Length: 222
Image (cartoon, rainbow, N blue to C red; front, top):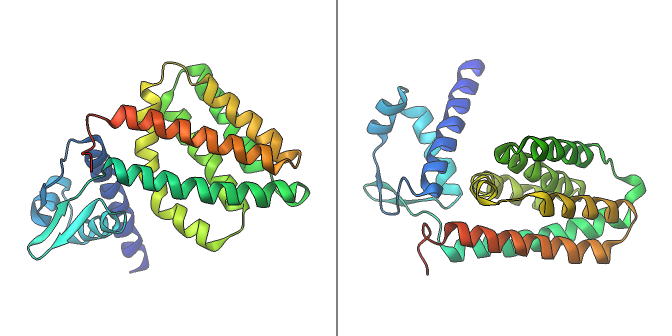
């Protein structure tokens, strides 16, 4: 029974990942009505994994529940700005904690992410770079050892995964982004929270600007 439930949850996560990408990329536009039976037929699964997937997307704000079922609400420009605003606050909080106690932090996760970013950069693999980039920031947030920050990140990480993938694919050169991460990591290890906080804020604001440029034709203004 436990194995079966785990398999259903896994399928639900995979379906949610596919639908999330379609919504954020605009191939499933705002206002699209979600019909469980049609999705079940499309993915060749029972309605259980479909409901699990829809619940995830509801919690992320990509769907809106109505009396007749769910419709796509998507992401607006304001949604993206709000997500970045909160993310900047939490990452600066993490920077303050990590840089204040560099000797007690395990740097393995962030070092590994930097290594994978470097490999992806050398191979010109924007997708792999985006995932490693996201992992770096995740390791930073986890190092803050704050359960609320971790809970927040678990909700928005899947959204940023798709958005960053799209944005990095449009960037002609990811070297400036990579260099930012190198400097941020060195500042953290050297216990310089002020400079690290200013750089992480500048870095994320730059990421927001590039993301808004990428999504300018796909996201509905509000």
